[in-house]
Image (tube, rainbow, N blue to C red; front, side, top):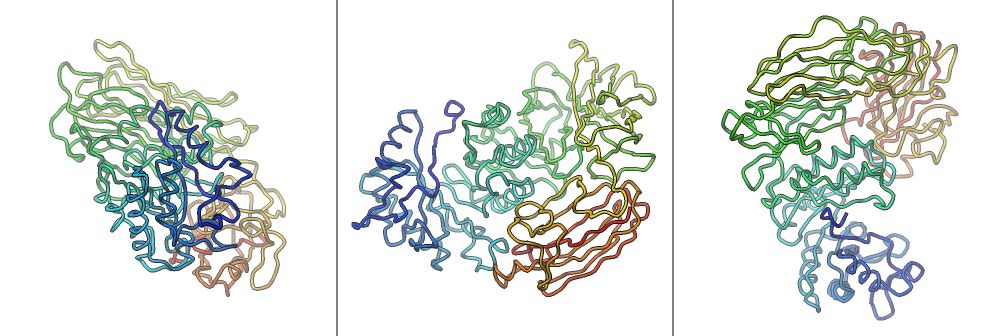
Length: 617
């Protein structure tokens, strides 16, 4: 990782002794972890050609509440860190908020102490105020991370722009998007030597490889500091390859230090552009949605003029030429990243986009736009692959072969065109049939596209889409929470069967304990496959009594039961003092979604329950 450009080994919290200061007032490392103190560790890091970072808090040490704080000792601690030869300091605000300090005041004081350290040692200052509303409760604007941009650029090299991106093993893609969006509010605050910080990178801490690749893409166009929150010794080659990709890192480390901005409206799919030092543009096509799609923008929309453009795919290294359209097939929760600039010389290879296979019909019924592809044993589905030519030159004899799992069948529909002109597309359709015994889980549909280019011969692309094969539908009178779901999400922690979210207490509402159900936190969605086999669902919904132990804020949610996209039940906004009974007709429902919203006031302390989910099937 050092050779890829990662420089800092940063020690985060919990490095100090249980009593963090000596009688003289100096910070003391935990003797069990660091029997010889921190200096030998720093020397070891430096000997590896790396730099060392350390952690403290702007607030005071509060026994039993805040384990490490520098308030009242700023200059002493800055001198100590410099004497230990640290190169960077992360300053948190957990103890600061506990002591009700003003972040701008204390961070400015700490920055001055670092600049004035007795050794004259330069040290990077990472300002880490993670306090946000409503995630943490209600706090004045000036105490929140979203306010740091107003003062941090003048005193720090980087500053956190939102709360933590997630927990170890529980980093979720939706929270990566949340932090990216917060980080994008003030791109004007960033520049060479001072950057917005959306928090750590989280490979193999809860996301899929595709989702982590997207996080790396997001952080790169944001010109964000790249700090790895995982144990790099245990990472897969896939994760290491994502972290060390030279073209992606070059975009992140571009000397102009400019942060990407969105071009066009916000939504499920978006275009973001980052102007690079040489005048090129880094263009990100982002798919926040749950199904694959082809995304398109124009070179003119990202600030480029002309009629020929070179596109370098930062992830695949493929170099093509476009007549002005920038497009890519983007998987669910994925992002494409191109470096785009003017083309010169002889015409290049046309930019041809081989679309990801898409399930457009199941059993003759259209799949709703944006829905995650879902099939079941015995189903017959229509699958389409669209091939698009964005180059200035035509391509000839385009072909697509669709490969499917063993035991499935794929039959092409229609004939292939003889050529594909500039700025034209062709859709190749297939009928895919699953055996009745198709195993539940994830299955790959792979499109193998080829076409002829004059002077280049036949070129090939391969794209794949993962589809979900549903488990067997419920049968008889069942406790639905005990049936295997297709997918389940929770705004905090993970959905918990027969317990309140987090798993530490039984489901309890208004003092009544419910032995079965699902505990979640808003926003949440739990999906089941019913296969038109069920007729009725009953449940009690409401806020778990555990919110009363957290505090008076939050604890409001909405509950919806949705069948095949139709709302079958809507609770309205419920507080900790409400429950609702649901008795729902499930006739004809193939896919059932249990959806919890935040009630319009954010997700803080929203511990919601689906209790007594009993289905008649």
